[in-house]
Amino acid sequence: MKQVLQHRIDSTFAHYDVNRDGVIELADVYALANRLLQAFGEPASSERGRELVEAYDRFWEMLAEHCDTDRDGRIGPAEYREAMIEAFVEGGPINVDLLEIVQSLLDIVDTNGDGRVDADEFQVLLKARGLSEEDCGTAFTHLDVDGDGAISVDEYVMAVRDYYTNPAEDTPGSWLYPRSLTGVSR
Ligand SMILES: [Ca+2]
Ligand SMILES: [Ca+2]
Ligand SMILES: [Ca+2]
Image (cartoon, rainbow, N blue to C red; front, side, top):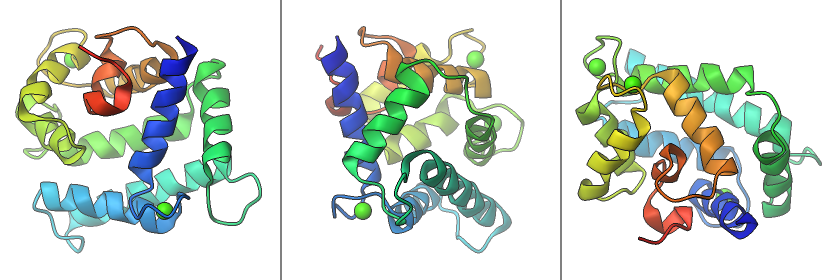
């Protein structure tokens, strides 16, 4: 059970270390932001593009504040693992910064700006993250816990917590990342 959660933490580390140099740094976070901009066909210079880059700046600041214990601008696997266990597995309160960052992320995913992130909009995010087309639909069904056809900030944040705390199969959190990363076999 613990092994699944450990695997998930290490897998998300690998996911964030885009340039594969063994540490997470600002360059990786920008690479993730760029991947998402490309998925949404949004230039970094547009208003929405700038908002996304700013959200990822804040994401980096939050990561650095919580994980980069030796303050060298690089987050190693051990620093990351320790911080994630402290933040989620040991059940600390949901970080206010995380709420704001998720809000910014979902604002960008809400392409038509109607205040709801529906299945089609959310699929773009999941695909950019590496989920297969088939898994995107299943993931949406699991993540839309109240079944109103949209992913809310609360639903997303609870799924993040679930991802790090609940090793069971088919929980909302288990669908946040590709199956290969979550340590769940079907
Ligand atoms: Ca890196
Ligand atoms: Ca929408
Ligand atoms: Ca919902």
